[in-house]
Amino acid sequence: MIIRRVFYKLTSLSWLILTWSTILLIVFTTILLPVIEPETFTNYLDSFWFTMTTILTVGYGDISPATSAGKIYTILFLYVLGIGLFATFIGKAFDSFGLLRKRREGGDLMFEEKNHIVIIDWSHKAEIAIKEILARDPKRMIVVIDKLEKAKELHDRIHYVRGNATESETLNKANIRHAKAVLIFADDNIGDQMLTDGKSLMIACAVERIAPGVHTTVEVEREEHVENFSHVKIDKFILANGTIAKAAVDSIF
Image (cartoon, rainbow, N blue to C red; front, side, top):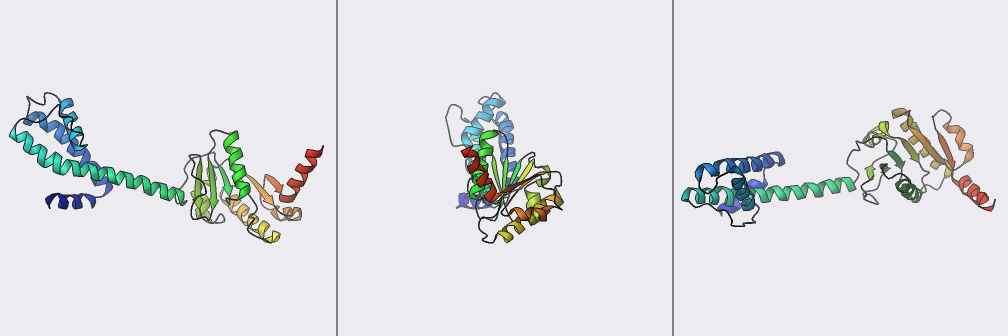
């Protein structure tokens, strides 16, 4: 009953308090044991060794307290409190890793690195571009912005940001100001080419407003829509159908 109450108390502690409590218990025990039993624990290394093997429940048994005071302290502070404290600490650590992975998968984490490439919409074309970037540049980070509930792929060089690419909050979460380049692909889910290019135009305007110096490449469905981007600084245009046609002609010649 007492152990259960101690466990419930420990699980309710915050991560910071739990961490410092664990560290203080280990340091305090390491210093105190040579004072309680100077003949058994002749140095701090032996004391630290016994403390860690006890709270980790390894229990090699090569060093153990011989006096009643040492045994009582070990039972009360290491067996009851220490093992429970460290077990709770490890449990919360695993929970934190799980929560971090869930937030990363859900696109809730802010990207803080620089010189990365931002890709708008996780489409089939984007997946091809991602593979190409990963193959050509072994160090380049990629940030993908989309509205998907979960990232399509978890990779140590791919960071997912969930949100609307026309909103400043989403672009800032992708650290657009310090990006090397932005790739805006035409949304294949929109049937109307005018609406598709209209969405690309809105995203390009948002990128230009926040990060005017970033290299921006935009895919457009209709060549005549390129003129509508004249007031926005676009470094490169890609014609969706024109690129395929040109590649076909190139293959002939």
